[in-house]
Image (cartoon, rainbow, N blue to C red; front, side, top):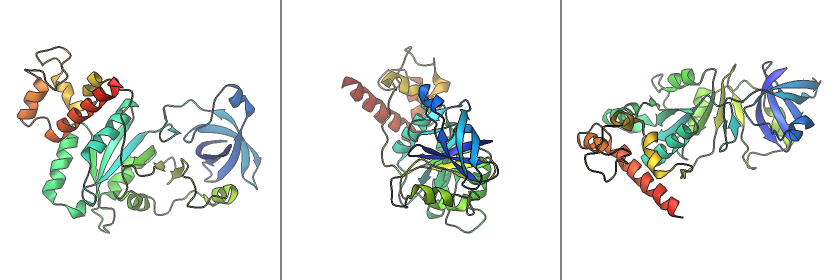
Length: 295
């Protein structure tokens, strides 16, 4: 039987099979001998020990397409980063940090701006254009709004048949979006909490939710800061997609687009082709990486 690991706690792995049941499994010793540890998101083959107790053994781990460290999950199709347009106001520097982190790991990222009912159409248009010009898909939602024009159906289509990481700061309405896209989660998860005796206030573990068929979401805890690692300051420019069109057009080869004269990116900035908001974030992150390298 083939399924997907949706949770791992204390050496037990909870595998969701296509019959829509979850089996509590142990990994065979051969994986330890090979220094392989199963991950949430792994597609695995299991031998069933007991149908009544829903227990089994993991006998094979399929090859991973990718794996993330934070959160610890494999075979991610995409990430959706959720920010509110108001209450709280979006921290665009934090948004850019997340986009860079996902770019580093070659994970497609969709931006979702929630609480659109709290701002003007002009504000929505402005922020949407900034990030769409950088090559990102942008979805506008108002998760608490009952109207059919709240963007949730668009999100549902994006999620279908994919494994998606949902992330964003606290207070942006992420829980409302999760509840809206999967009001009737159809996987029978009750037996997990029963077996591992975890309450809702215990340590948070990485856990995938199946919201139908091959559609899985991972809801991550809110965050208020992110630190960019493993990028040299002079390489940061490659993670700003909108700079790519100006490659080779600056006076100097290897232009960093900060202090150099006759810089095509800075010329585009002065002409409004490059977003000042994005460029200011780039400049700030560049200085941060440069200072970090001194340590």
